[in-house]
Image 1: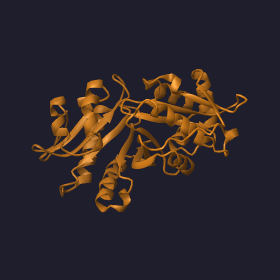
Image 2: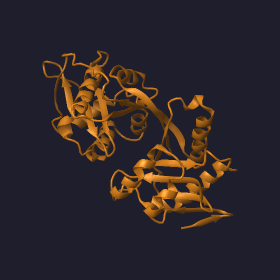
Image 3: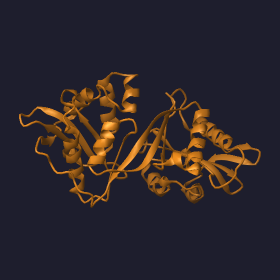
Image 4: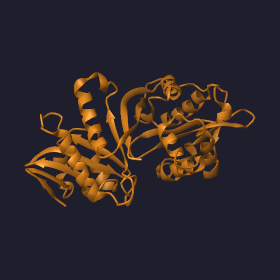
Length: 316
């Protein structure tokens, strides 16, 4: 549906032939959009533009985990930062309202919004304005800040953490074992997403939904998923190295509550990093909440650099 606000046109892409027009505004995800369309993780009618003539002044797009799924994230929302466009936030808010009315099913909450930003975005006036303008657009639609996360990266050539010898490692046995361990790890979690989920459902359900919704989408070998045990065989935690649609990742690492405070997080993270590095990967990506200081410190000790931050906003 096309909506006209004076000389401003708000509409979705008519097809992938308009991808060049959509990419007139710069963002790190531009290079992934064509492949996302091919794979079905995006659809042209999920990608909306605000146009003045043939000039793009704002845009947005949703993303799904796989073809045929409903939108899972709003991960593109851009305004024309290079222009002194009057009412930039108004334009973005109008575009978001129009697109949500057409794309999202009635009765459900909108998908979460994420935005990758520079690590020092608060210290740069231009970057700060860009981030805060986008947040203002989302806030007008009823969203709120959930958490800010560190985007972390390990690169080949970075020294690998050597095994300490304190733990033995074996592959995760089955779904039930991993969900049971995840349920225990959620006790006292410092992760904002997990805490938000725990406010709405039991820990076992949070674990099961993450396993079925996220972990099963990885096409990397399941025998990469490792349980760390003491020499007597007692599990102390687990690590999930994987490859998602874009990069090798550390998807999850957790220490069981009974074994926290002994530095086992370093052993688990080190094992996951070594497993991925052994496959000649160009990089390993990971993320953790800014407020999860122990986890951030563990990644730093393992050689991961903070390359970006991620703003997460939610409607629930």
